Image 1 (cartoon, helix red, strand yellow):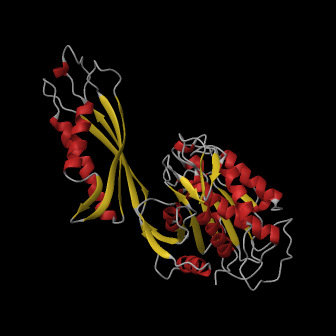
Image 2 (cartoon, rainbow, N blue to C red):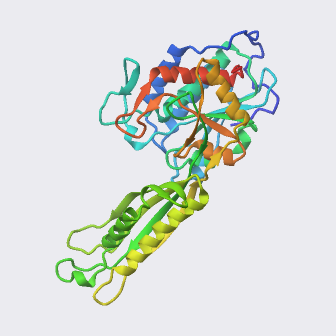
Length: 415
């Protein structure tokens, strides 16, 4: 879609506005919850975000936002997973002075959320089907920032230059944020990502993650007639994993050199019980806030597999082998304590009578890549709990608080 020239208001957006109010604006929270329930009911696992993206565009157009203020990029085409659609952005010129601000949420959900139907139960929203997760991660964040945008446009609230960004494929490794087309963001100076539980927690840093794919190759043979002639790839993988567990390189890793985590998340291989399995794929990850220690974890994983491959031999003396491929998914970061994004987020929380709590995440966030790409980004929660599990729920009170914070940040009325 076409971009509007910098400094010009998109066609169809009135330049009239309400007078600057003494009190910060409050969102219509009932409308926000209705919007949230609609979003939760739309399927949209990673790489299949088209329907939810199109729903958002319809809401924007009905509110009077012109087509040339709405853009998509082709981030999905740069992802190894492909996908239906890229990131979605809406840019508004300011009606008052100030640097450009950006509000962010991701569109995709994990596969466990496929088929979710939300129901309201007291102060909670939960999935109707006990066999699915809810998808509040991150439809709650999506609804919170969409609510802020719609309130601004419908009520003609004064605001600085704004960008709203909905990313794709966050759950697969933040591929939307990694490959977002920076030109459609308008050079924001402050950025606020809504993705998490507590809206009072201001996450100003996150760990870095390194993923590895390990191909373990052995030698096939008949498991009943001549097992000694084979080399079991499963045995190699089992020995390596057992060693990593025994030596403290799996789960929470705490060594004199640092702290981190590691996990073996995927094992694929084997087709029959009467065949010595010749090949297995193992996928692992290593995380740490310290890049040097993260490399130590990755090195320990690779060494365990290579040595296990050398220790499993056929009767002829041949041994297994491994091929290790790794990539940095996202680098660790920590914003300075006096970062404008951090200070504005904390002021917004305080303006609602709460005390902000600074946090560092042990999981990856869109903020990792956005910060690395020159957009300093803090993350706030939007009320979800139990993300990526069948116990996922949404705290309605916390969601409403996130909507209020989002609107104050978007209108620069955090105080």
